[in-house]
Image 1 (cartoon, one colour):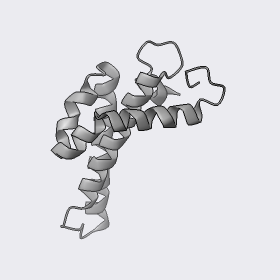
Image 2: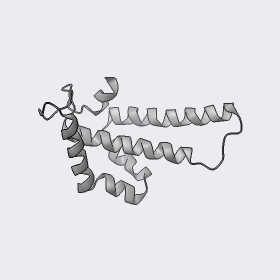
Image 3: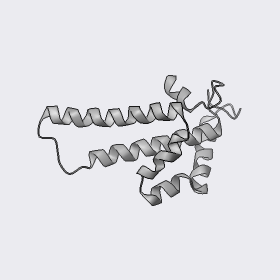
Image 4: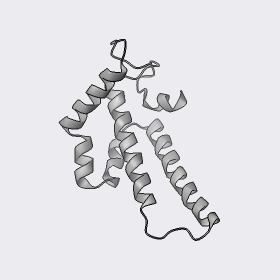
Length: 115
């Protein structure tokens, strides 16, 4: 529940369409950063090094969540970590329409919010 609260901008206990869109952008950002980290060419030579890499990734995601919880505009500010074409896609009309479709699919009671 606490994770969902990060995206509940108005604090009403539910996720609206605009909040859902921010959530989707955040997930895409985290996925990209995770894949980028995983694609680094230098493999860990020991279990200790591998654990350190995993800890770094976890710390990055945790910091992003904290930043976004404190200021939701941090989602947009962190889009610059993405390649330009990917960042543009996350603010495109197609992406927003896709979010709307996904939102409608999970809004089973049709009340316009996710609980």
